[in-house]
Length: 108
Image 1 (cartoon, rainbow, N blue to C red):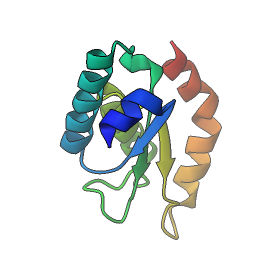
Image 2: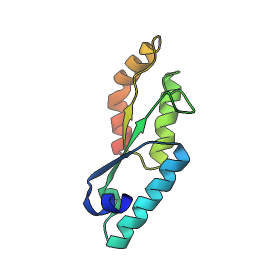
Image 3: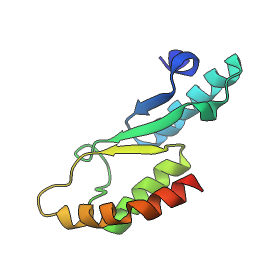
Image 4: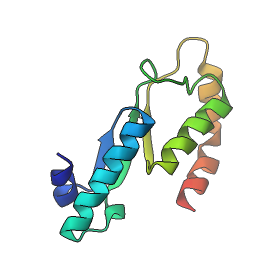
């Protein structure tokens, strides 16, 4: 599948553990290299399934930033994240208010 992504896709969405994401990104990079495509031409996104994740990114603003930071280091550029559980809406509001700063960090 990642060979097809390397040849045809402008973006690729994955899910899984941080180690799985790193491994898949490396495989995709290898496919891109083999066909002479810049691996950065394929935007990498993550579906973060909070119910299955090791860490609850909605536990605090810091937890959210840590999750995003770890995955950014692994090559993820965009995030699709499940809604927080009941009682965690305040963290979502803080994250939403912080989006302009986060975008500035990721575009730097």
